[in-house]
Length: 611
Image (tube, rainbow, N blue to C red):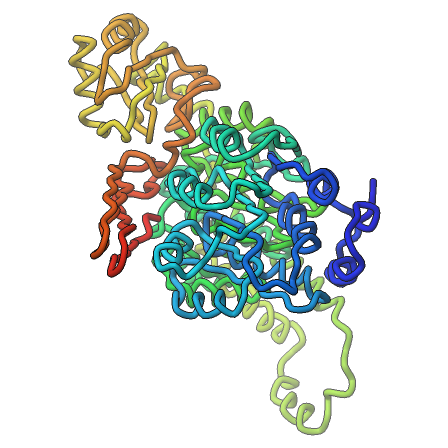
């Protein structure tokens, strides 16, 4: 394997990245940097989160830009403000020994006047989220007609967040003669379309296959009743607390805040990150997390985009994501830079089938583990505490006369009583009631078989190509199926997700359902029904077989999208991302509305985050 010098990186950058601990290029860096520096071709890269993409495009761009020229020469577009800040921070670190560098990040939630001022001082590189960049373009505060390099980072996530048209609008305003570098963890059709329109004979790089999991990550799961999830989470965290540094993923901002509040109240070193926080609050939380002042970070999928924290030991899924591809994004935040990590899922009884879908699509294998008993947690805590005492060296110089005098009151206790007092402080949460707490594990096979036998014995699970995006919920979807199939709604059980649904039915009703629904038109979409790859009763909101809806609607689908572009006075552009996927107890993007103005002078621009 080459080192960075052999890849053609110049000395000033080598010195900076050497101080950052860069020694051996990652596969994406080894393939991208020489192409960027020597080949002159566009780059289309398939690479997961945490593979070193920022250095893969950042190092050669820093080397190719003329920093004596204050014009904007490079544009990096990314989906979230966290990723925007992270990329900017990294590029500034890489360019530490280059003179006259001005790299500006622009994103929503921060002062636009301050960002305009930074740009006008001469920003050779702008790192931007699509929405804020369009704001600046509408205000004529940024000139992207001079750029020679465009990078689209996390392109699939930008599409998921509804930025496809924004990205295309921005690209259309850039010069025809430019270098384009696009990185994405997945390659849906929309990404290929953008590549075909705005890239010229791109050099394609693939680091791992689409949706594949990192081989350094161990994938584990436990099955509990939904009501026991929080108790199970605490036991898992307690049992692994000696080295735990983790992100816990939740489905909604309310759930994120609620669980974070509970953990803090129960004495855990936790905080949360979600769309309701101001930019200042988000940065404060992230700074504390990066410096390990917080060991547990609760986050939604969208809020966590762009979090680049090294040495995470665990990723915990309080709920599985509805979009299976998001599982890869989540779990890829641990096991980075050659280190190992654990991706742990708390399942409730009906999510087993979705676990199989992830195994199949992400090429990973899950290991079932048991939630430790309360007594096991207590015993491990005790062992850790005693090891700490045994390995603590006595600092003789701190025991001056005052300290020794203050210890005299403790000397009156017998040795056993004194030790008991110290242990009581350490194990104060482990009362008799706690150690006698029940086993939280459930038998997935007996539970699943029992549920099936009681109502849907010998049943069949059917995949249906419509869901919440098409206006369905559980009640009206059951009515729809019953009407089209001419059967009683009492004879079926349904799961309705974002762009697809499942029906659990008796074998005798399968033909009627398939013939009644297949080929029907609903809201302009053809309804398709097929037998799922999972047995009935084994899956909640998973996908059937290897299919199940398009990525383009994942998590943020179901809403109405309207645009008007005004002249003077400012037309209003609106997006609502109502609906969304439901998972467990919550939903992605439920009901939030985003509004944008794309008009001329006086145009108003408002946005409320939908996550």
